[in-house]
Amino acid sequence: MLKIYNTLTGKKEPFEPIAPKTVRMYVCGVTVYDYCHIGHARSALVFDVLRRYLECSGYAVTFVKNFTDVDDKIIKRAHEQGVSCDAVTAKYIQAYHEDMGKLGIRAATEEPKATEHIADIIQLTERLVAKGLAYVVDGDVYFEVSKYPEYGRLSKRRLEDLQAGARVDVDERKRHAMDFALWKSSKPGEPAWESPWGSGRPGWHIECSAMSIRHLGETFDIHGGGMDLIFPHHENEIAQSCGVTGKEFARYWIHNGFVQINKEKMSKSLGNFFTIREIFEKSEWPEDITGEVLRYFLLSTHYHGPLEFSDQALREAKNALNGFYDLFKRLGETGEKVSGDEDLGLVFERCSEMFRAAMDDDFNTPMAIAVLQGLRSDVNKMLGYGLSTEAREKARNEFRLLGNVLGLFQSNQWKFANAPIPFRTTRLEGMGSEPALVQPQFFSKSQNNNLSDGQIEQLLAERLDAKRKKDFARADEIRKSLASQGIIIEDKPDGTSRWKR
RNA sequence: GGCGCCGUACCCAAGUGGUAAGGGAGCAGUCUGCAAAACUGCGAUGCAGCGGUUCGAACCCGCUCGGCGCCUCCA
Image (cartoon, rainbow, N blue to C red):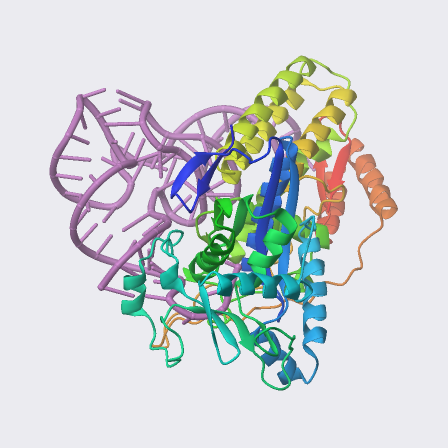
């Protein structure tokens, strides 16, 4: 039985979909005015895994993830660069797909854009005005929070509390400081659509109500996003949507924690962020390996908690994955002894169950990874007793199958050598001022003068010959020479060797 | 001022009432010509602190301390 922590109730609850065996979920994507950083990656990945797990549990999942492509920041960026808003949004939507694709994050079932739903947005706004929940001022339309008694239910805030701490808002046309824009009149040069209130554009929040209702219906199962969206974004979405329909909106609200650097939230304003693409560009590992290392790292903490991003954490993730791929390498070899074969099925059955139990418990990916680590250890032991070629293939496939939910263990070309991590996140000591981030310390990509497989095999044969003649000096010389080029040799009990790079 | 998250070993990190998973690093051992990998063993009498509830608390309640976030755009 799957349990999910629901922000709305503050409790872990059994998951019961509205319609049997189907899940409709909506996740707030990004406002497309810049490249995504690791924080965005975490959010996208968490919901990608959630979706994969639901599918693997037998649910038919309709997964909608939006792009907010009309917004103040986009307009600002377009003006700065002297291009159209469309050019800005097209560029960063493409970048989003490229970056998330490298992390193995699947495209959603639907990826709607706000600008494609203007008619829906206008219609929702009209209905809110007609119901007396919104009012018009000089071509702007505001939602009136005091008309919605349940306002604050999600974020556990009371209107009075908000009022006390709210920033002084000089917009005196609003009836309440927390009233928010559904529709904004456009200034010249801004994107604009005709509406009953004049030429204008949507406010922030309403586009998500419009898109989720359009693609999933008025009530659906799961709504998610980063913690920072709880207030005001999701609170406002609920107010608008429930205000219009009079029905329940989303039943389960799921929010992921932040990625931090030196205990601080990764954000543009602090300048302590790393974009996904700069990490891939600077990494010395091939793309799929860098992607898997990032995935392992991002999933090694429960989605709800904070996650400290650091060069050391990535190094640990890489080392942990090396252990798995070391095993997979051995599973790729042939085997004659079979005394371990009989236990294999049982071990995988037990691990599958534990894996499912972990994921059922609010998508506990660190627990699930621990189960896989236990499996790695078990299979290593069985390998010691001897596994047939067929059993080895079966084992490798089981790992691939289980790992697929987390997007791990799919590679056939693992790189074992540990390239330097292309940045550092440690603080600078001293200087009397605030601790500062060390600027990314980029390493130049090493020259790709790698030996071919054939050349390596030839050297290995030469080394084997030297070993047979007890010429260990020569054998070690060859190993050392290969090591300097990132080739690691492991001698097997039968005297032959395997190698990896 | 209000609301919320977090504080578990050297580092990362599960565990939300029944007696501290897992990984990384380290140390020791087995194997090995050596190395690597693997395996075995070692590693918190204690979960920020102090009280309380309970037969029993890392888990529940209260207070305190520390870190962070939201209340303005934010994944």
